[in-house]
Amino acid sequence: NPLAVAAAHAVLNIIDKESLCERANQLGQRLKNTLIDAKESVPAIAAVRGLGSMIAVEFNDPQTGEPSAAIAQKIQQRALAQGLLLLTCGAYGNVIRFLYPLTIPDAQFDAAMKILQDALSD
Image (tube, rainbow, N blue to C red; front, top):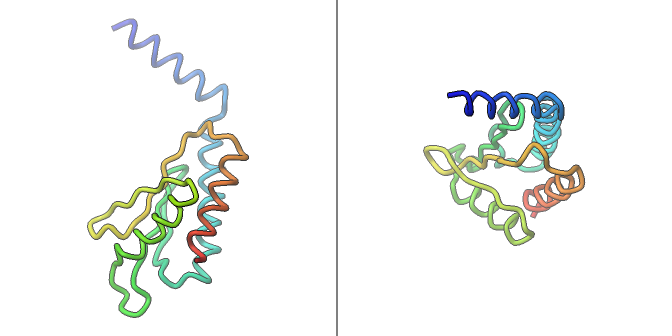
């Protein structure tokens, strides 16, 4: 289908022209660094993982080491109260995944990181 090929070609050109792959790596690394730094003071953070802009943080009960959906939901609600929508996932509901557009302005990304830090530190 020539139309589908033309659309795909246009999308690939924009991805290349706007360096969206590099941006995914940069934003993802900033997010991972924020979460890794928070891990030192938030014992419920069991793992931070991901690649590029696909980042997730896993929460476990600090006393038992068991997956904790309650902790993930608490952080999710704290963030939502400040305007940041986070999604939980995983077999136990104890993982928060991050989904953001690669074209997000730096100021909005910074504001989201501040809300996330606040939600983790409460």
